[in-house]
Amino acid sequence: QVQLVESGGGLVKPGGSLRLSCAASGFTFSDYYMSWIRQAPGKGLEWVSYISSSSSYTNYADSVKGRFTISRDNAKNSLYLQMNSLRAEDTAVYYCARDPPPYSSTRLPYFDYWGQGTLVTVSS
Amino acid sequence: EIVLTQSPGTLSLSPGERATLSCRASQSVSSSYLAWYQQKPGQAPRLLIYGASSRATGIPDRFSGSGSGTDFTLTISRLEPEDFAVYYCQQYGSSPTFGGGTKVEIK
Image (cartoon, rainbow over the protein chains, first blue to last red):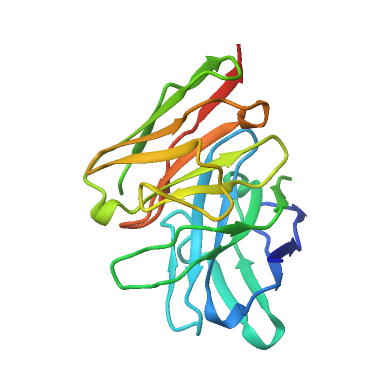
């Protein structure tokens, strides 16, 4: 069965950095676009970033552009999110999620499987 | 950015009743690229509907989606105890955005 397991969350000071990982199993990871989505405590969902299956395309929400970098290692079935210059408003549970095919230039991601999330807290 | 407004914020219903949830977009959602998710406390969201009206794998047929353009609806024909949760819509015709959610609670 499809499994997505996030790790790497924790407490970090404002201005600090953190790298999240997502280990995928139960499907052919290299065939799928992947995304990160976050949810601040008690709040709604916010898409953060996506990456195409071969890493050719990436895209970011304006709120994280220039600070976060998404990447993947298809040999390791893993997705990553490098987060720099963290702010208090980045505090959230971060989910990795799978975007099912078919893909096209006119369709942005939606999400058929989600991990359980990892909590990132930015506080001094 | 397309803003999605969900209403009502909270829906108080009894098991067996019909639930109708609304999602309105600030501009037209291209190709009906609209999805619905269910989220229970402490859990990740679960995909219910994509393409405005297609049920995801394993989703019971009491869940149905409809709409196009700027107005979309999620209907739960007869509420089961496990359906009480928060529901989010999401558009993916442009940079993905989510609605603020509708909480379906037991009356």
